Amino acid sequence: KPSFNLKALQPAVVHKANADQITYSNGDQFEGVHQGVETIFLPNGPGKYTVTSTHAVYQGGFEDGVLLGQGTVHWKSGAKLAGEFDPDGGCAGVLEYHTGEKYEGQVLHGFREGKGKMQYKSGAIFDGHWSND
Image 1: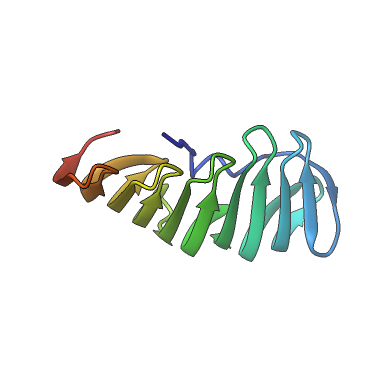
Image 2: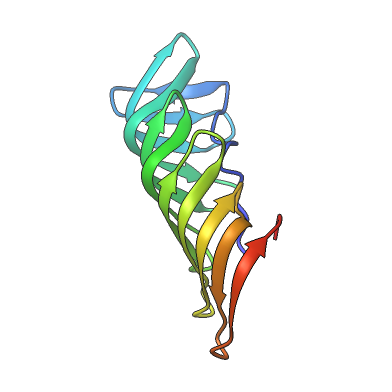
């Protein structure tokens, strides 16, 4: 199961920054609109953020370093989450697994949380409430 802490995309120290790209000291990279002072730069507007340690990539909106609005996360495994991201680390959207299974509903910090519907590869469907799954 893919996991992705959607609030963790706020690194504090920048290794290198130019007009449209930031490279953080942990190797993560951001391409797009950003704002900052001295060594602290935050994505702010549309862009693409690559997490070096997991090879996860988020493309979509940011506000003050937080994922916000329409966006998509792609994982190295082939899984993807597309939907509307909120400032609390949640997303209302569709999570497609590399196995062909699909979840539609609420996601919080990369986990199924709240109302959602899971369609399994076997064809079975679970429509109900999820908690940190």
